[in-house]
Length: 417
Image (tube, rainbow, N blue to C red; front, side, top):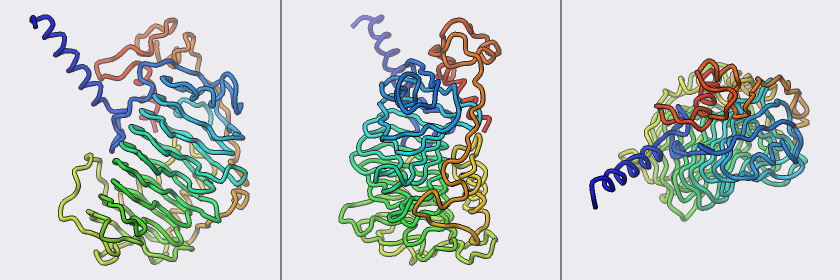
């Protein structure tokens, strides 16, 4: 092989490695941190709140290789389940007004490989299918950041199957509907990271874990019979790193933070706190080893992705400020966070969203999108500020940081949160 060919292969290989290691966005952590989403693909503008048809969210995610931006804010009422394609970026942070709520039925991310989803609300409801609000049956390389997911009729945010390299971070997973009322089953063959989430007002499965799991800096509030379920007596092996989480009893809490373990559940755990006195103060204590039920204790932590680590108290404060679709918190998330802040006085497990004061998804202001002459997903004002050509679609140009121009814009929007 001559020198020029050798140089070509070295550069090609180096470029491929760098691309593979590019974070989905600054702040992406855990097993799903390298999801590529729609990077380099076409921009699709959601221009209406219709359930289907041109310009709808359903149409936007129906084809792979897209970056989905929103020219509208408000509630999208869905009659049937939305299926997300692979290689998709859903940039809910672009929605004007109070953002986007998808209400009425759920979303499937089965085989939505290399997907990035940020800043949307998925609120299923009693009239939806008897299924999960968000579900994954198979897939890899996905990251969900700042989502608010509620009112699942089976489970609320759940994955079960041949699944690997997924992160759920900075999310609110809430109010699973009875008769099941479950936060989620996390049953996978590969790694899943659950980081800095709030599980609140779910009867059980906050979450129930089977497989390879990283559970760090989460807050769990007002469960009844199951907070973190350690395999549920499964004969399969699980490998879990459980650190710096805060379990806080609510009015209906009637079980310990950890239940249903066995010797097939291999765990490294540290600094998990439980506040059980419901006195309106955050004053919990480190959970003693014997309260993790029967497990196989590991002396060393697993070789899982390194993540930003907060203390349990810092975790509580962070979640209060940041969890969920928090660029503009809607009435439901505002109420849920205030419920958490009551530290034992408030909380309710429901069978229908009609039991809530809002009686549904509430009012979501539409707002007005910024002018985007070339329709490349970046508004003219931002392109001028960053010395780009607002008359030429140049969203896929790559900067020195490895992100495309449109990714830089999307990341900047999220950084303002």
